[in-house]
Image 1 (tube, helix red, strand yellow):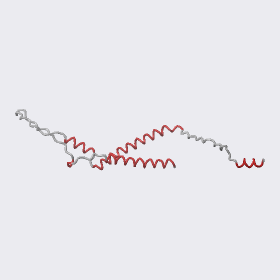
Image 2 (cartoon, helix red, strand yellow; image 1 turned 90 degrees about the vertical axis):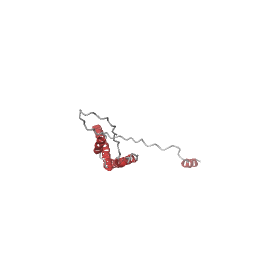
Image 3 (cartoon, one colour; image 1 turned 135 degrees about the vertical axis):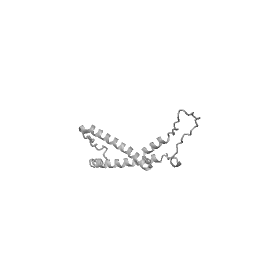
Image 4 (tube, one colour; image 1 turned 90 degrees about the horizontal axis):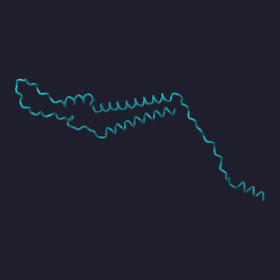
Length: 144
């Protein structure tokens, strides 16, 4: 009978769970004293990139529209001025003033400028593509 009890104990499943491995503790590397200067450098670089995107986009927009900003400001400021009447001699009686029509602003070629969302969407998509490419390059260099 003792032999039968030993055989039943060997066939019976174990009810105790396996022991758990110890927890893995990871330590972050210490950065030292160059954390704040590098953060400042990253902020300056980010501002320079943002300014480059804004001014570069403005330049591309002006080049594609073929209307430099300086020329359009000069033409609009001179065309809105009313012509001055010629000076009269003080000895002559002044005639009754006749109303002069004010010049109406006209668009170039008689067409209204396109101000739809197409240009804004194109600018957004272009910015996203550039930012994605720069982020991908940054991540490749960071991992290697």
